[in-house]
Length: 450
Ligand SMILES: C[S@@+](CC[C@H](N)C(=O)[O-])C[C@H]1O[C@@H](n2cnc3c(N)ncnc32)[C@H](O)[C@@H]1O
Ligand SMILES: C[S@@+](CC[C@H](N)C(=O)[O-])C[C@H]1O[C@@H](n2cnc3c(N)ncnc32)[C@H](O)[C@@H]1O
Ligand code: SF4
Image (tube, rainbow, N blue to C red):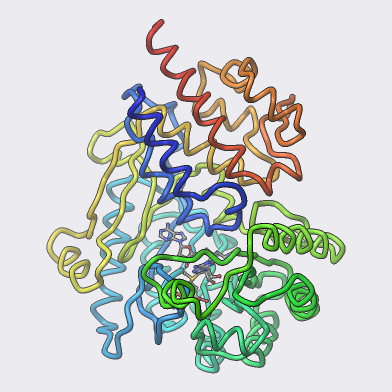
């Protein structure tokens, strides 16, 4: 037990104390997944297993951005035919092993999936539609790097079946884009947004990074206002994370660049939330804002702990491998390196590098950690799906730490469920650890007395 608690605390410290609020979800869950995987193997609540979302990873980029440590490779001679065949084969294999019969959304991420030939995107979607039910109105997102080349292919991607574009704008300031090592400028970004909006009105998202070296609050506010005048109905705000091993990390270590302090980034986040609210964008998750109901159903399914299949190098998934007779959900991670991954797919249909069975506690930890990122939090109904025997009130209601968070106005536990307040969402990294500890304590106590 102590070992487990120690692991959770360590993972939380790795998440960064205080205000590490805008970590892209995948990193958050990866860090978080390093802990708490050792819960007792109590069968999980029966889950609707026939449905899942699908993530497809395109691992190649044209160049390396200075801040990025996602799974990406710079390669001039991508074997497109082989990549396409392997992505199709792995999609089929994961659909088979999970026995998922309906795909509710598809997300092509990367790397730079806008470098993939549109015919590859179409082929993967055809594979999905052949092997499962893919509703005609299912959200199909493609991440686009706003280069002139990305812009030129938008229409073909639309024809291939994409109906939502997520554009990596990152900044509208050319000097910042240069420091980031991006292969686009602010004009390219504005043109790409306009064209994407023409093709998918109301279904275009932009990613922006704040907390950059040298950025002031005033400067950030002006940049965000300019972006909001140009963008569509969805915005993702990510606080710059300094990743070990990146060029940016080395530049900061060498004193060539200085990151803004926590108080400054906290201020930037709060002012962004205020500005977005004034412009009609409702926050629905720590980093995500939408107007006119343009929330991303794919991302929401992650935060509501839905099942998902992860196809492609380094992709991860969460599903029950029913074909093997399993009854517990598993976390699958595909092999990172594309050439090795392709060989594995050719050999055995999928390139799965790691499989971890999620015990009851581990699953509930995910439900909590992901769900509290949403403004709606974890509803009673959602919790009950995963924890039919102990409701939110039983697990959290009597904890003095949880009561203290409520008194401080950071957390709400009421007839809707458990969620962060407006202030609590900005402090999620310090709100979550006591809740995870309470969940573990409750789980251990039930184990000891049961
Ligand atoms: C992995 S990228 C893939 C999308 C696409 N290649 C691009 O760069 O536009 C997805 C998003 O993660 C965010 N991101 C990547 N590295 C980050 C970092 N170190 N800190 C904060 N956000 C980061 C960026 O906003 C980026 O748009
Ligand atoms: C940071 S999010 C950006 C989403 C975007 N803001 C939107 O609203 O559509 C997307 C990135 O997360 C990562 N990602 C998402 N789902 C993943 C999965 N199942 N496996 C691996 N990486 C994933 C990919 O690197 C992808 O480029
Ligand atoms: S931020 Fe996007 S384009 Fe840049 S290296 Fe990472 S994945 Fe590639």
